Length: 274
Image (cartoon, rainbow, N blue to C red; front, side, top):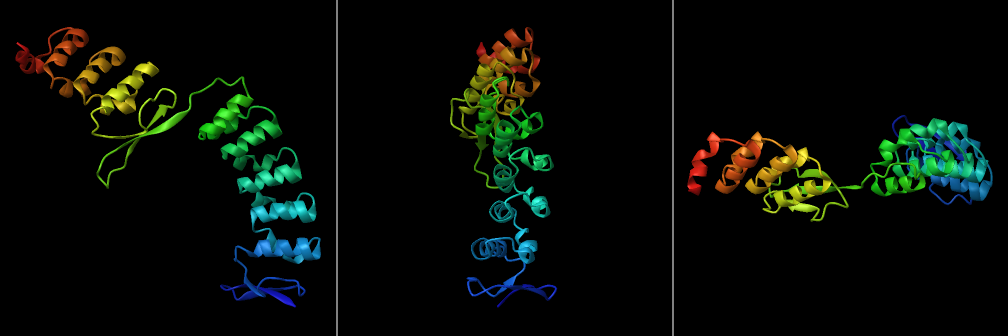
């Protein structure tokens, strides 16, 4: 009997001869995502060999193409490699079971998938792969594995997302990257949480360097803003001064220790200390 593969747009069809052991529909759309699998299964279990007339359809699915090359062709299938190398999982299968070594033509795709890039560099290249490292770093777990495998890599900290949010459904939460080992607080924190400037300042203290992305929050608290200016900016912090001068005592400390002189803009506040 005939299996009819048709294209509903062009009204074209192709007939493939199959026997009574064909277990699927006798009429299948050319773009049916199951078609490559059906044809591969028939070739493997019934024909037990290549099915040349069906290969143009089998080769449309990267993973099925890799399986066909392994189970039926038992070797490389050049006509399908262009589609195989577009899918990381199919590349992995094809390299592992067919090529068994480098596949330079697929490396552009391989390097962009962290897990596959780590496998390829450690098991195939057997060396560091600098071109892939910017992509591997996007996955903390894979980057840690990569660093462990190549001990000559300078250990870099793992970062997590600190999510700063508010109740406005139309606003986008602010995401700050923080060192996982140095961030000791919740990963989600409200923008108006009074502890936010404290948490961020303590994090900066532990990293021992400025954190520009966090300064818009630290400056909101007069005390932490004064300390940040003193210890990390090591000078005046104009963006924070409107907030510092809301508190007489920290205005005084800021004038004495940071400005080291008069602060006319804050003198009305400073007079209240008398």
